[in-house]
Image (cartoon, rainbow, N blue to C red; front, side, top):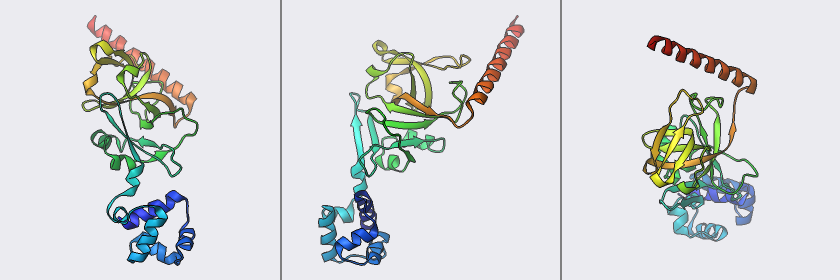
Length: 249
């Protein structure tokens, strides 16, 4: 753990290898060797490092100190949220893209997994915990597949508002982006697609592992082309419905 920990602690202090080596009165190459794990400091140097970073020697040698920056938040249902902080104590926005989606369902409560997700930072966000999810499919048109939805963590199902959009994470349905109608008296909500060809469906509170309220989104294609594509898709869907009606008649 030593090489990993001292590299993390130096960067957290915002020091270069040379600056830190100067303060410990050792050559920069020696400190670089410590961080690479190629050189082991003697007990006297370990004590100096321990004092400089205000960390016990046993922690430096045996624990992942960067886990100190992984915080846990709990709501009334004891749903656990692992988050990460940057070196300036600002909360990161972890990105759950298409490659990470399957792993996220199994590991969203694992601080080590969350710490390895790609991260982004957006200034001036309101207070709260945020995460970015890549959405797929055409159920929420005109928002195109592949968009990133930046969402705020919802701590209590009582805070879920009707006709607002949310990222909903369940074991059976995976990660979905839907408009909702909340039924707190029935401990459930209705998930509604903006694309009307997809029927609404019910999700019970017990099924929900995490829920995130939409805050903003990032689109990676031209807005005008999105509207054209959406209109074309709508026309095709209408043609399909008419064809089905004709067959029934």
